[in-house]
Image (cartoon, rainbow, N blue to C red; front, side, top):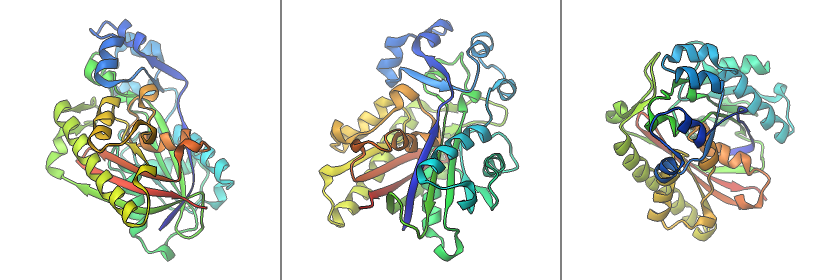
Length: 331
């Protein structure tokens, strides 16, 4: 069992609303975007003038244009997590990271975040795109606790607007930037405990969602939507079944899914009879922020009663992968 001590998040200041996207002249408007994906606004590390003038036709230029790096945004989320957990960088003995669009091939994103925070310890990446957070939990839970330090930071530095083609209306309406960081322990109790993790994959679908090196995000939209609904529902069914088996009440279990788009999440909720009072999301105001989506929902509501006492986090990612975690509040 893992113990969750805190989650932190960071959203860049620059906001892309639907009116801005409409101003790009790409045959889209607020009504079209809202109907198809249910997203009203998103954040970006890119200057809006850069997007307006270039539509980010060359993603290599976006690395230079970005106002913050993955290491910087990941570190900002990490500092919030440390403050919430009442810990310091000296308490962290390991850093794991994973995202959809890393800054470099090597070193690992985790190394760069640890460098930014001045954390002294091993740092490596466990990445499965949008499902990275739950994948990281799965691997940590499977490890021998005595091999792990007291506190581990899991970081999801997501600034994928840098790989979005802003002349492609099907992609640019989705993506936003956000970084999250969680602090877990294999032995020291925290505010939450992670009682179950889940991870599955189908590598034959690897071509369906990808970001080529020096290229733009691309996906087989309709197929990926069906996959996301089906596999997120599978994760929910497994985790909710375990929750009930352990004596929990199904009507008290909250759902946090991968924040791909609101219409996909609504389809999962309808399919599994998850009422609006149990469905927590932020994709309507943050966009699809990759691996940071689900943990950012929990982070934004960290001190709110709406989180309840039990959460099923159900995420999907490229690869193709699907993963989840069952979280219970410590009393």
